[in-house]
Image 1 (tube, one colour):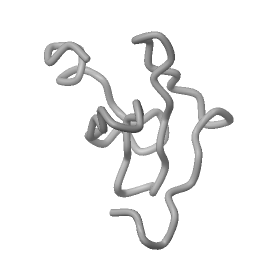
Image 2 (cartoon, one colour):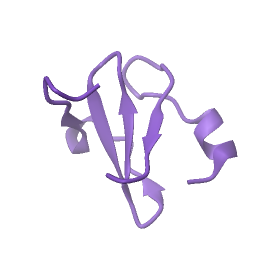
Image 3 (cartoon, helix red, strand yellow):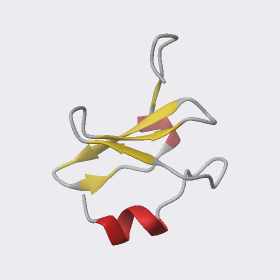
Image 4 (cartoon, rainbow, N blue to C red):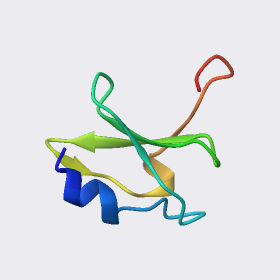
Length: 58
């Protein structure tokens, strides 16, 4: 994931910062506890496509 893209991307819900998790190919919003998928290098920033983080995930 391009570092410059990560700097400008924000959570579509709270507008907060996102953390890129390379292993799972997801952008995570810790505030909303959602993980947005990255498909073929393209972030899918739709609330309907996000998965809720489990209790054990930070």
